[in-house]
Amino acid sequence: MDKPEKIMSPKEIFETLFDITRVFTRYFSEQVEIGELKTVEFFIMLLVHFKGPKKMHELAEAFNMTRGNTTILVDNMEKLGYLRRERSREDRRVVFVHITKKGKKLCDDIVNSFGKIVADFLNKVPKEDIEVVGDAFARLTRLFVSENGS
Image (cartoon, rainbow, N blue to C red):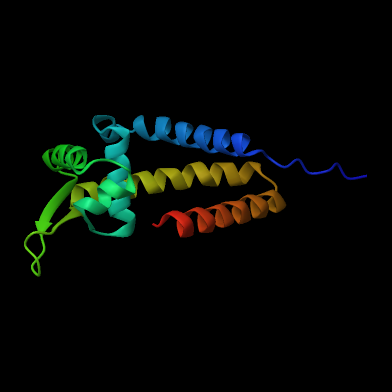
């Protein structure tokens, strides 16, 4: 007789997501170059890397920060050579944040390292479990991204 599936409570889901984020953040912070970035700076860089150039106010909104705080963080990442600002040609009041070659290389290196972690995980997990986990991630992503924007 099959054991009934346990449904996770919202608290358990949140705690699990927190644990995964914490483990990955710790792993990424062990990368030599990332050590010089605050976690939120790293996330800003990843957002620009994955989603393309962003306006300053879009970065502030994406991470629920003030524009002033976002400016300070982007200033630091510019000094380190990971991001650069560029004024819009259509509207000079608008400033876009772009990733630099140095920032792109770091993000690509991290994505490749992450791929190795995932491959190691996939080698330890039965195929049917991988399908379930993959489906769950896809569903969670669709739910959260559609409700909260990208």
